[in-house]
Length: 499
Ligand code: NAP
Ligand code: MG
Image 1: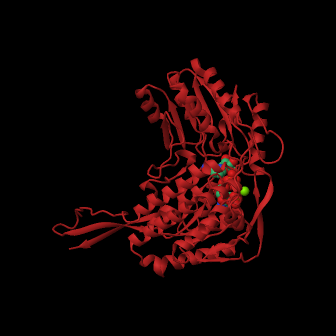
Image 2 (image 1 turned 90 degrees about the vertical axis):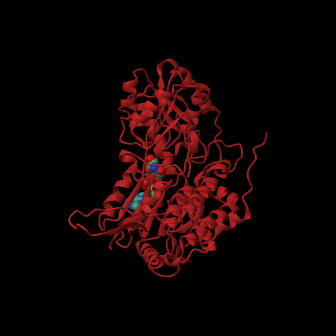
Image 3 (image 1 turned 30 degrees about the vertical axis):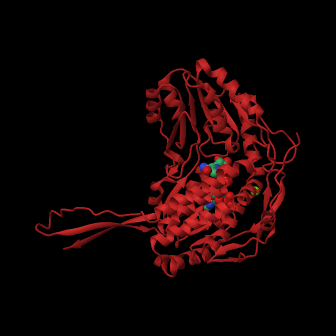
């Protein structure tokens, strides 16, 4: 059967070809230094678009616009209901352009368009709607107080949750649109104003979202988008004295740089960083769901997930069966351009990421790990890497310790249940984990013992706008999603009145 390829919508071609600028103060403007950089189609390695290479002076202008919008003009005067309606309208517009965003995401990031249609775009819409609902529900408390040194006096004390102010948001390339939605939604619901810096590899959906922000009717300067590189646009945003809070998703390494940059004015920081998530399959699991579950835990989004189940711990009695099953699933995965409808897995996002992941595979081989399937690139154009299952690993190997961020899983047998928990927790990361078993008590016991922000039981990669997500240890600070994320974007003020 001939491969069916999605015809690129005229609106998508037109958007990609336009002269991309920066969204500052409600207008698309050229970067002050007039520089641009190439954005690549990872399925071919060809240039897809050119985007504005924002520099410190552009970040300064965007922060000034965000400050102005935060302090004066319509945004701070709006009712919370009006604010919520705007966020809901953005969700409606995004939904109306679902196919366009799915195609953009596929072209820019490499992921299958079929996946972007059912995951990236709908999840972004849903998140925005969930956060739109919170705009009217961000409440303080009334608190009975005693004040022992003021006998006989009466006080009324209450708290207010106020927007934290101007927020810098720096996002990665693995889910470009969804990460923009995760960041914008709660910050807007809380009443903040924003400077968003998308990843240099995948700026297109954030730019198109900028169009929709304008169309939705957000006041000028509430959302600003500055494209550019981490060192020249991200770093000045993280260090900016006019920014009250920085929210970052990306590598732990850059997360530490963000913390240092934020120290200048002690801006608030939230971080969603890397992971090396343990995925634990017990012999008493329903292997019919655990095996495909373990495959999808690592191969979804080409392994470019911060929570990817990259350390697969399998109880000894079923180790061979599970490894063979995951390897069989890996071999069935069809690699191809994201726009082909029969593609299961697209290319990695960039040539750097391709080098990085194949470098890990080489290191694993040198240290004695064995690839049961895959193990490298299939060759040809584009940044494709075969889904790979490694065995014969040791805990100190690079492939077991470090985040690979590619379709590579290390399968590790276990027998002693207590040692298993120690091994699962033997990582600097603590983002997510999963347990597959039919034993309810064991499932909850292990869930409690794992030091990670999310534990899935008999499932993996289940996300919902209402469920907080974030990391223990070096996987981050704070939580995304749920009402918990609103804490990232609000200050808590105590007001005390003598009656
Ligand atoms: P990264 O450098 O951490 O990129 C994330 C974001 O931070 C991008 O917008 C990036 O901009 C920006 N950035 C880079 N250096 C910065 C700096 N000094 N100050 C402020 N912002 C800065 O991640 P990457 O290099 O794209 O990927 C490297 C590895 O990070 C991956 O292999 C993976 O292990 C991990 N990663 C994790 C996640 C996650 O969700 N946890 C996501 C992506 C990557 P530019 O892209 O424009 O440089
Ligand atoms: Mg790209």
